[in-house]
Image 1 (cartoon, rainbow, N blue to C red):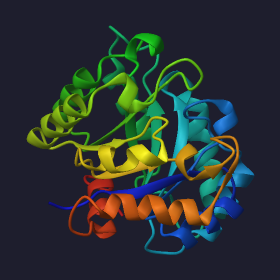
Image 2 (image 1 turned 60 degrees about the vertical axis):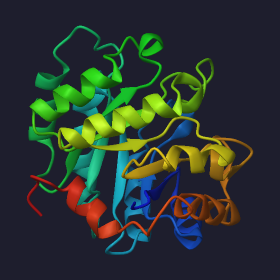
Image 3 (image 1 turned 180 degrees about the horizontal axis):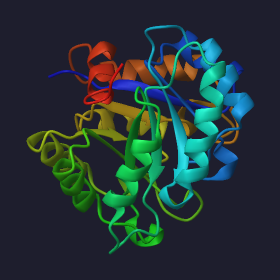
Length: 256
């Protein structure tokens, strides 16, 4: 059984360096004060891109799908300043319950630079987000050739953590459903330090954290020792995961 790797969400280049020093396998750039998928400024994205070494995949939060047009344009303008592009940008599906999110999502994927993958974000608290259910997103992603889905929580103030919104058994079922359809899952959602092992045991391709590795909560600062402990918690679930495999999954179907 292969363990998931650890993705750490950072808000600036300094935090990116700390997360890398602690052993994070994937760096995700976001602005946590701007919500679940708050997009960082162009300057922050450019600075983080210079810190992440070649061979380490990094991703961006792009906000909600309804905001994706502006996010894609910001990324396109920033890429000229980057020595290596992010492998993916994530768009949330809040407000898309009962609507054809795939058509809008694929339209934004087509606007992205060819080396960057768009990843849909399903919300475990789908009712709060007025979003399609996790299983619906997995099934529709599979039907449209999207190889990765991130599962997160939308309402960081009112909803519970991932494990409060869904049981480990249900989450494991989501992962199995995705694998059967060729879709890899990344799991996020206010995962506490003591929950990382349980979430990793559900066998996603990656566990994504911020608050669990911060001093002072998700709006605090990344701590290197906390990142190391989170990596250890992921490693306790099985044989070592391979970040090269993660890169291949993220870039499936994307020219590089």
